[in-house]
Amino acid sequence: MTIVRDCERLAWNTSMRKPQERTQRGRCFMGVTPSNRTIADEVAEAHERVASILRSACPQFARLKPDGSGSPLMLALRDAFHAFPTPTENLLVDAGGFSSWRDNAPYWTIVRYDLSQPNTNTIRFVREVRASELPLNRSLLSEHFGIDDDSVDDACALKVICSWDEDFFTLFAPFDIRKQADDYARELAERVARDSPFREMFVRETDFKGKYGLKADQVLSFADLTKIDGLSACFLRIDTSEPPPVESRQQGVASVQLIPQVPEAVCRALHWAKRLYVFGYFEYGFYTIALHYAYLALEAALHARWSATLTRPCMLRYRDKTKAVEQVTLDHPSRAAIRSYCKQRGWRVEQVLVNGERFPLTAGAVLASLRRNGIINDWQAEQFKELWLELRNYHSHLEFCPIETPAAGTLARAAYEINTLFDSLPVPPKAGTQHAKE
Image (cartoon, rainbow, N blue to C red; front, side, top):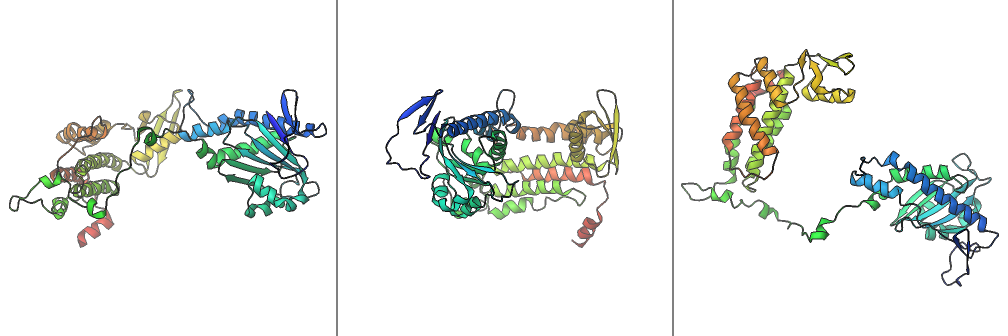
């Protein structure tokens, strides 16, 4: 640890003569006389205490896994807490008789941390000043503590300041760090945990761009983006031997429609599938994604149709490991709402009975429930399980990326199967009115 003090002047003179060095109890003091050695020693020990407290408090804020792993932000937060002590510049402010906003604290401390040098306990103690002297030392506050013109008045009024200047962090707080190191450390811990610059400074992620010399994609013009894809251009009209216009892709799915009973979320998924199909004209891979979304819309339709079988309200019954039974009612139940409620209560959803029937955790269980309730027949259940859900899984769990051809007919068939699921439900009043007008 190195403690440097200029007790004669508030500003440092870089041309001053290098002072003699003396050591005491293993510490190096530069230009420190016996009369001021005690204060320097107290400040040094306070920073050691603050660093120790921050390390102890770290697990409360940086939630890591047992092996020490965690998200980049949590790892950055851990490194920020463990960066202290850093090189610091300190100024004690005697606020005796000065009215301040927090309990008339008798002493305040300004500390500027150099976070570019973590775990480097070099301390420069400037000196102790009275609060009434702060307005006379604005240049010091700005130049050496990073307190800009907008904040100098706050400092002179003894208001808490927390500021950043590249790798430097300044904290002006109502504590005498020598006597209130624990309180000061708690204040600093809250700043470290709450202020995003701390985390951003210590984020350690691999720069794959630099490591492998990766180059950014070329930014294409609108004209280039809306050119027909080379593979799409391979599909030619017999009469003209030219690729069909993009309007032909829109016409291919324009008649693919869902009935009014189908929930909005399912309609939205199929709408995106249709849009992706159209834009496959410009990016051939979108045809594959269009099919994927059609299969996802079908899966969403199965879940929504099961939700539509529930009574309002519905009864949930759960038996825990102690054989205790809990029973509640939900006024607006759905498959997603039941799962969310069970998660909040800490229930294992697969052990919950919904109106006396076990909750269908898997798509296969949903199909079985729909079959028992007569919503689908045996052939439909087989088609959903062996065809549609298999296609959904094939496109969702990738080991390689498939390339599908344009298949407007598949989107139309998916819409038909969805409509079949909901055709037995009554038409919603508003949807029915709108449908009649159309």
